[in-house]
Length: 430
Image (tube, rainbow, N blue to C red; front, top):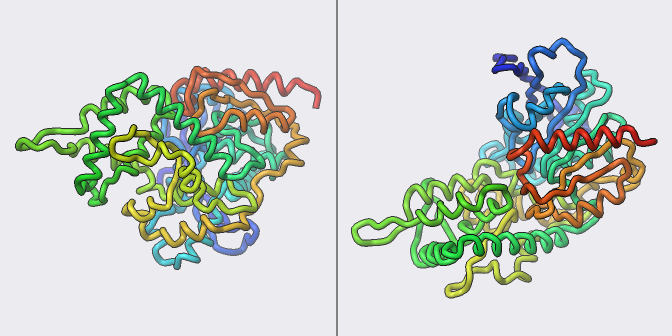
């Protein structure tokens, strides 16, 4: 297998590790963890500081992108970067319905408990030790920022400095608090979208009504429902997404032999929007990223009942949902059906371990520079500010220039700003 290659000015090296499934039992079952090293070709022989990147999710692989653009271009000016395929994703031991099929529901649930932020961080720490790196920097986008606060809780002495974009969680709030805030922000995004594109409201109602009156299937044979259609509202939390969403809606229907029907291209796009089909960790473990010593009990589903505007009814206004997962997804989505019993067990699990150590974080000495987005649909700004107020050596750049995916839109500028903030924090008395 090729272990390295050069593309433009960047050298890429592949690294494969066998690490414990459960780090508290190092002699037990092993899983594969993959990471890709990137470095400026001209600087490969230099003793550069390392930076490990934690991507968003959970359940998605590290970026497959060029080192000559965006945030990576900025980082490679001074770092050797490690893109970690978090366990269960990408070229690491993959989690999907096929890889779990040999296990019972109870065994699946137990296995999946080892794929949260604490285990991801322990993988990174094991790699740091294998590389004999004294300290390294971190960058976390969205859920990756959650991982960084776990890293700061478990192994602060291993960290040089930390950058976070759109990913500072509450350290103590319960899952229901998170979803109350999320539904409110999602309501705001719906209002803004339909104010910008008034005709889109009727388009959405027409699509929803058609789905209620007809049995429509996606290209994979899965029945397509109103609830699934609402899920594409997750795009409203990303920059420059409103216009493409409108274009998608206006071309949803075609006329064949005098009859109106949803087009294949529209339905194909709807299937592509369901990342849960190929990345089930996102669905099955999403609520657990907020759980500490308590169960989620399908929090988004329960809290939704207090926001009746999201429950579509004929003749009423249509509303998109956002970054929420629901128990019905494991009844409707084709590749999630086999995981339904395990998903229910995980939703009921109460003895989740703690992800953050508030005592250790209150004594933090590692520069923590954050980009916090004022209109973020996924990470509540008030909770971000609340958390950072309890962590010394931290500073947020709060901006309304970007949405949650700002790093993908203008990453070079954002990272330059965070590096400047971290430099200033580094000069503070410790």
